[in-house]
Length: 262
Image (cartoon, rainbow, N blue to C red; front, side, top):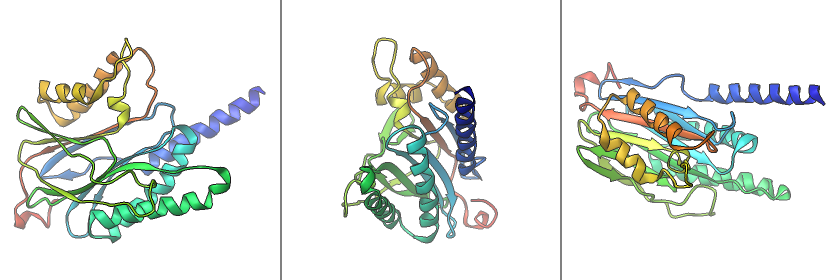
């Protein structure tokens, strides 16, 4: 029995290591923004995922999502979905067809799994930023609304589509936002806002907004502060995966710079 548990632990450790290899090893280095990310899985394996994709036309893609469930099941679906999304983002020129293809992929996967009575879905935010104009086109498919801290104001990027995998032919809208120099864009998963406090209260979107407005530190310090705040807010070990991406906007790229930075 002890050997069996040891073998299981080794398999989980290996799966955790492989999962981490999927994600970018570093954030993009670009002149128009400072980008950072921090990801923490509650049980080693989980369903959160993120990616930074430099698109062929010079635009920067930002991906974050959260597969339904936790642990090994969510991790396996996430790995399949992650690879599919990455390829779709590189081959399709707009956020809407990307999200539609992802939805079809999950629907087809669920059809093949009906004998196991499994249902597969994921929240998803896919945004494409033009470094020359700082305009971002995006689809938010049921994901917690990203926040833009602009001075002492918080803007939120609400859903314009349901989570992928729920419906055969969902209505998928695309939105645009004009980013500005000194904006701070925060993307996150619900493991952050659903952190439970000492008396059962949720950290919530309001708690995250207060944290954003309180200090204007460097992007990497902001990430550390988010997770440190969560550690002190909750009474014990985190129960859900948590991911945060911080993008501090500097200034649009000049046309002559686009061949040297992205």
